Length: 623
Image 1: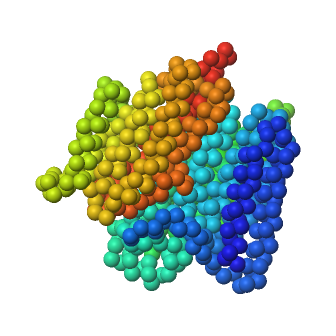
Image 2: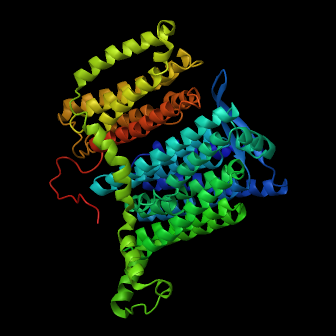
Image 3: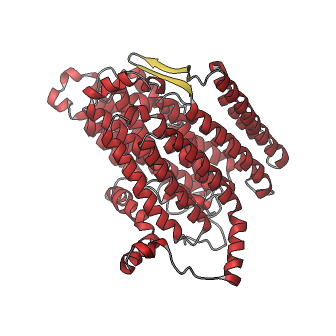
């Protein structure tokens, strides 16, 4: 049965590639390809699951593809099948099939009809890779695909300001989750000294033996997994991104943020449960986070004026309860709860437009205020009013993220406004040359000085990418700094033993190709329009769709999208950072977070959003 697992990945990939070849105007053919792909996938899943039940529900695991192998490191795609995969597969296939049918009529004659179906099939590819993953590396491949498809669907109405703005906001939270997963993979390599599979994690004796002697490392991995799951499933303090993601079309809101994508944080916790179930403090932390999220978001949901926002926060509160069930070890209940919440939220979001109009009419003619509520019975008036005001302000979750995360980064970047393209290039050429000399002639460098060089070069890379993130005048400068950041990271890790230059070349090969392509696209755009500042959205994808697509490919290549050399190189680099080099790992991971944000900001500002020469008024603030 293990050989058939490849089919469940190849079918969505084939359907996605086929949909790219269909002309824009052939709506019927586009939708039929999506129906056939997802429908055939759903029927195949039912048949396969029945056969799996007849066989006695065995746990299946297959090592599929060796992507890269070197001494002490093996990057391979691993597939895994058990009851968790069964539930996520059947729920995902059925809901995606229903949403594709609904979307055929909902988006009829929409300008981005083909683009929507392409992105939905692309999302389904990432979803299948994630739920069939047998190790963290394979899961990360699907995780990245889901993040990109989320960004594209939130910004579907790309001629408007708010969808694009909110898409960048959501991507920034996703990027935190991505790096959390990378750090979990990094420390996991040091704990197991191999690419550990989820099948091996089910070995209680093996896990217990390693955690007994590496308590801190085990706690760190569990904490990174929790941060990743919380960011993906919109738990506190990341809850505010989910309502902002509702700017996309209603079908994508239903399939992404009501049912499937938002529950992948739960999937990550369920899949890694055998690892952290022995860590009581982690289980308490997960349960407390779920409880706090459930209480706060329930209150926020009850005061929302938008039906989509109300459903979003209600879904977050239910996922908080699923976090509690997972922490308690109630796996079957968590899976049942996931399926029920996914079906309910999908239904609510798909009928939300008609329900909203019905409720408005009902309240207009038959309004009767509620005389009593549960809150009035248990809380005093002053406490109740305080809670109400906090909920209407959404507990200032957005302000919290800006004050303690994004604003300090922007403040640091703005302090470097004196840097120019020429000065940075001259500085890079000199200092990087000194760094290369130091790597090749370590025997000439004092060991005490050599110990500080990795952190020094990583700091320079962090400073450059901070400048790229806050640059507003010159997109070329921002792009150049993003590329240089990867060179500084490679140089910083090159001082560690066993990190050979062949591995550096693998990592930087993707950066160089993607960087050159992106630089060419921006130069071409400058020659055509002479406007490449980052002060506002320019929307040049309307005039230059091919150039926009090429630049998007360059952005994916340089940000480490699966399975580019940069993607494999980033994972490879982290495996060579020692477990005691916490500062180096922190600086490199922070650089990768800001690097991804700077890249997506350049793409969004240059190619999507309201066109720079629009004659119509544009709303610049959310209600």
